[in-house]
Amino acid sequence: MAAKAGVTVVLEPLNSKECNVFNTVPECAAFVRQVNHPAIRLLVDAYHWCQEGEGAADLLAAAPLLAHAHLASCPNRRGPGEEACDYSAFFQALQAGGYAGRLAVEAIWLDLERNGAAAVRLLERLLAA
Figure 1: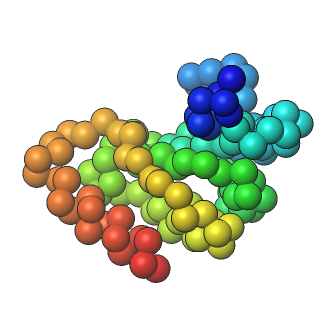
Figure 2 (figure 1 turned 30 degrees about the vertical axis):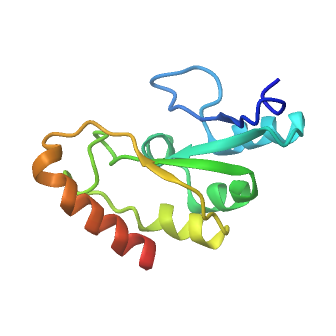
């Protein structure tokens, strides 16, 4: 039905503190591969990826399945730049895997008006690295 409507359904691994199924990128990637349908893809979220202690290799192995990515800091799910968080492994794995899709910030902003511009600059630097 999704394919007929031109919709892609993405499966997002959620950390084990929030969900009891599909917690890791490899778990979701295996399911997407098993379904083997072009309208079923994978979403990766930096926050959940970090919470589960996953590595760049997990993300790189699943890169061909990616249709979307989310970004928030770890450990507190803040907007980029609102707390110290090293996003470099996440972005390096996305880039090494050839991901060129969209990236959404899905975070708890402490002060979007004040920090939004700095977040954009941080993301531009990460994407250029």
